Length: 189
View (tube, rainbow, N blue to C red):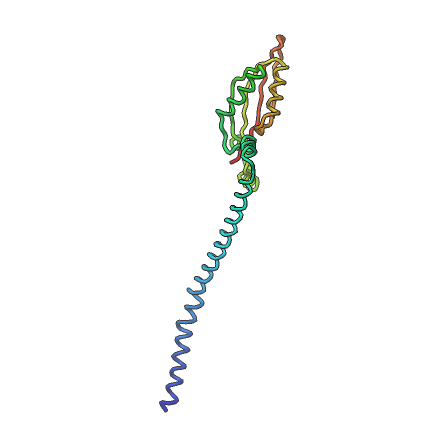
């Protein structure tokens, strides 16, 4: 009798251990750990792809000649340098015979917020994801018409990316006019 009872008892104990401990442990904590490991493996693979892309872009950047990188940095700088900007505009004005005054700067984030009181959520996301930002510069100039045209031609040929967005001219009988200019300059965030 004990010869038959012992195998049956061992089978019942094995089934109890399997259903009481092994199966819940395997489907519970081990399964969650395996899914966490899979997500970490996926993140590791993504990091590897990112590193490869970063290395490829760095090689492409290093292949660009230094003088062209300097010109690109001048065209679209990675920060707003108000002092250098004013010095550049003042040097251009001095070469063309224009007297500049009343410099005023305003970033596009402040002007964008005042232009629209309640921007749409999608529009706000689109604005913040742009790698390029702009700065609005207002200034006053006093010059003859010919000198002012030379100043504008100098702005047009400038290596710095900018737009003349507004020009106001005050009438004069002496031939020397007062101008109010609004410029938009661009820079990388």
